Length: 512
Image (cartoon, rainbow, N blue to C red; front, top):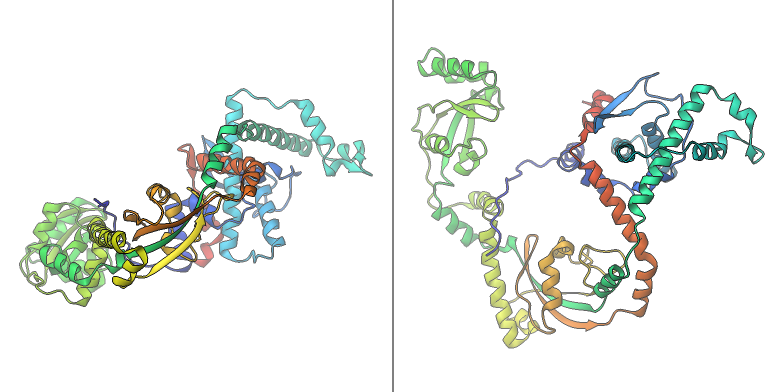
């Protein structure tokens, strides 16, 4: 049985900056990682050289708070680690020719600097809890090599003394943190890769398989089936014409407004325009025609929702507690029962099914895919494709590359977008490499598609593949470790992430 997980419908499309904001707020760490260039990695946190305090800042002596980690403020002020990271990433983007005045680019730079600072703060906290103290002799040696103290390629005592005591102390403190951070990263990331682990990766690399494939998109679910679903679920697609009033201040205020409308001392329309706090207030509360299922997120209590859907023309609902306050409705018409769905309703119903009845759609197309697979077993894959007027696609050779490891041959989803998401689909890989050659696979759910694979050939990977794994795997494993560590800190409950609010308030207030 296909999954019948129900998800809410996203009805309003956003664009530009609004869409950027929506995606960031939904998954800040994930989305930032997807838009930053590869220089934004944990290793860069270690390689940035320590700098002496700088004078440039947004406001003289000013600090910007972007949150905290384990109670330690994540702040930006002139010369601190956050400021150094901001300057570092800005320079990297400037060198690459990026327009730094672009609000998206500025956001990326500041977010990358913030994340670097979170990782640095978290790592130093871990070292502090472990009882680590940076050796002062090591700090002295590092100080002596800094460019600011060099003259003719040698350490200059005169330059050292020329720097103020306060600046020297700040520089020592920065170096102590940098050395502790380097030590933490070395201890955490420089783990020895076992021979067994490399052998396992090599086993994924060979053999390589090539495939033919047939796709049954969920979008191909026929209108006749959607229509049948509508007809068999009349209560979901009943139409109601309602007006509503939303009171957000208090239940007491809501009861007063409700009683004044109920006893006729004020009209529903006037009460809506005067007291209601929703998008329909200016229209006297008129919400227009809605389908019953559209009220599910608006009125979460099933019993209360059923009463509203059954209101006779001109009658009021009870006062209902909602997410935005207290609400009551008036029916403007008798409920409309749909007998034969038109094209507009079919579109609405299809959207509903893809969100709340996706398993039903998948089951239907899995049955169609099984019919095709059975025919392919008796008359060959290619002949079955022709007999059922389907389209055959081909791809490969690919290795068993779960997770899209860089050093193995993987899926080219640009050429076959139907395989988007398959790289981390365990069922896809198990089926692809366990199905006998020249035999149709069982149907596989991949995103919004049902696919049937036909492994057409299997070959041994080139000998150079093993050499490449031996040479590069330690580096790639280190990258994965860095990414895991970064995400661990950024998703920690210890992190109070106020980056977005501070950034918008500080840099974009004039644009709002």
